[in-house]
Length: 136
Image (cartoon, rainbow, N blue to C red; front, side, top):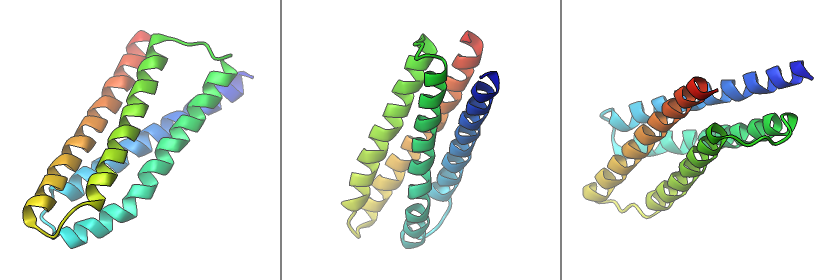
């Protein structure tokens, strides 16, 4: 049983690291000097991976919770809130992306929103990880 817990937690951490890397790649792409068409194609390619990793984090988190008999703690509540926030801002960003016009101001507004979204997601991911390891 201890091996299952350890493996589940390690897998959960692997997906968290992958999410951090993916967020970093998205931030790099958003802040690089690319035309919006090239940027759009790359972001379209990375968006499914972002949500797949978020769902894998959710799934491995549920497995870890089940193995630990659904013991709830403050750090777990923070993790759930951060995950939900990432999903909510992702939905808002996707809706905004679909409504982009061909004007430069609309594209610039989306890039600013997406940059803030990913920066906040990375900051929240790091803060939650630090919080978990200092409290736990």
